Length: 544
Ligand code: N01
Image (cartoon, rainbow, N blue to C red; front, top):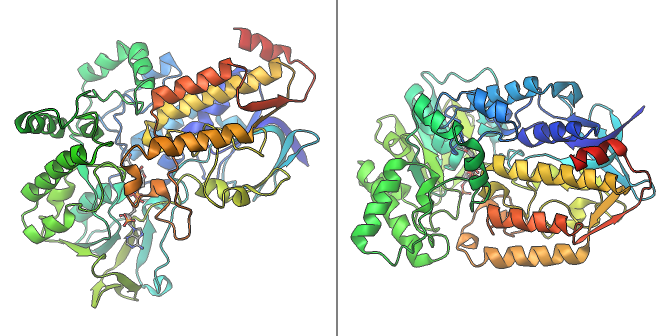
């Protein structure tokens, strides 16, 4: 039996949850499908030891409900994964979201009918839903990837991926553990695993820059400093470059004396977190400016790690700081001073195979009881392209063979009535995801309401608008140092994936203004068609 809804939402992470809430408030019906057994998305899956958000909790939280943001109490400056998941569940309960959500269900296919302007969505459990709109709230980092290393099936111990961690947790006490990868997930997990396991062998292909988080308990005073001025602070954050109030210093790193520069870096290092990259205004634009920050962090690594050879291997040399996602840690570099931690450079001694007993890299075999793959995700496009999406002129997979192409990261030409939340071509992963999610959800909800109020039932990005947006996105990206790094932003981590810079780097504030202007101009760059009946309930909601 085909169920009929106004909207199908794919994913019950923070994006899908808020999308459902907004649509409901407009009187628009929706069904959410979620592959996991509960809400939370990223925070549902990534349960590895040490997982926590590296955007401060007072900013990494919903702003749409004044009551919610006043009531909820975070226990730490940077909330841990279990606390963020509790928050997601609290939101689901508070806004009664679960009654329109179906868990343990993966959307497999979405086909658009150009005659009826409706999507037919199918799932792996046999559901068939007909909906006017399809909203992909599928997450940017939701398709975990284990590299194709020969012999994985032969390993006698247990293997884990940080992005698919067992719900019951893992006890590494007394075990020898291999960790493959040194991105954000590994950098958080390694210190925690090292405190529990007998031995940890870290297999590093590319060292990353990491800044100490300086995490600590959330004091009542600090929480109140936000809560007493939340509306204004949230509004300010929405217009920042990254959607984070990070106290940017609008001065070039090259305009100040060496002493002054050092003083500012020291201050940021002591304060901790990703705000380090806002120390000067040209760190991501100018190689010489970037070098000053990179050298500062390299020196910190050398000061922290006692073994000089290990320190040199940990100090990144091949990419500008910030052009691979900057990491935030608690005692990452210090962990290499522990007797039970070893670092293997797999750039010079590549992993050749997994054996029954462990990992063979170069000529050495490292015997271990467990392997943790902290090897990342098929980012930004993986989850979307795992669904067979077809709007009559071929599949999305075919369209994006050369890399994702979108208008604003919200829609892609040729696929009417399908929205993406934080899709490629939007600030997404370069921003506070909460801010970007709320902005996209609000824009999409307003757009759907507008269509209905106008008696229309179809919206599609024009090819010309999409081409211009892609060109603009590339132009802005190439003004920065980002394309110099072999990063997942560029798709480099997935063999065969087209290498294009996927997120939009023009800044959250400027991007928001562009989206708002486009909507205010009657959705410039989109073609609006079809329908005839004006939905009065929605009309009223829009007028309010
Ligand atoms: O994944 P990654 P992640 N052999 O892709 C290595 C967000 N996040 O899960 O760099 C050996 O960054 C790979 O090496 P290389 C955040 O946006 C946020 O850590 O490709 N090594 C790299 O070191 C982040 O950026 C938070 O040379 C292999 C690592 O595996 C994103 O998620 C916390 C390999 C993968 O790093 C992804 O982070 C965690 C191979 N065959 C994550 N294949 C917070 O908010 C891959 N690697 C705190």
